[in-house]
Image (cartoon, rainbow, N blue to C red; front, side, top):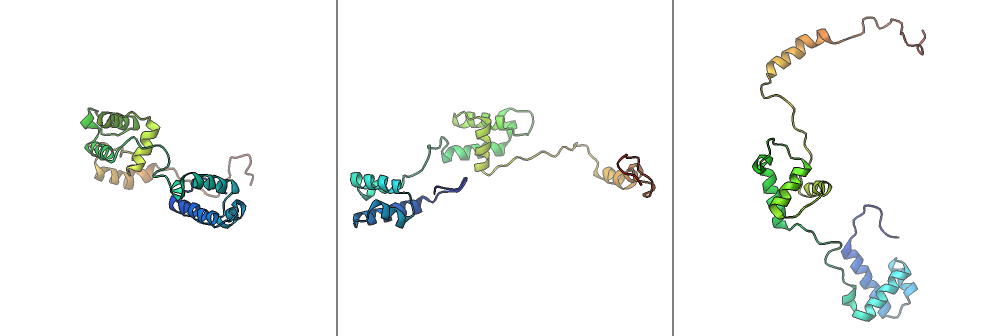
Amino acid sequence: MGNRAGAKRNFVALEQRRWKAARLLQRGCSEAETARKVGVHRQSVSRWARQLAAGGREALRRSPRPGRKPRLSEADRSRIVAGLKQGPEALGYETGLWSSWRVADLIERECGIRFTTVHVWRILGQLGWSCQRPVGRALERNEKAVRRWKQARWPELKKTPRNKAARSSSSTNRG
């Protein structure tokens, strides 16, 4: 049973399944029969039965949130987004390029929390920010001259085969 790798769990459905098992157990169904009807392992039903006996149906409620509590609050996240929008120059960097270690520096300055660059990458993804490559073009670039060069000069320089029926010099291609 269990979950497929990467599948999200529906915690509401899991709670409803536990409560269905609790109703069946309270009606007198055996643990094995309850497990078959609910579609779970018998050991799960055994654990739920112990919880039900110790704390009633309230003990079978879903926990508010699985996993560790997040270290960044919503206010922290909005401060990070505001800092990202200001650009790295606002932090004193010379270029307008965000790197993960620069974002980590921003988070530490704004929120007082230190994260690894790998986790910073995850945070950026959660905030809806993605990796963007800067356009590597000179500010002095003349688009008309580039277009003219591509149309006039490049075809002259481009190598093209003169005779398509010419013999190949490759040892594997005999003909």
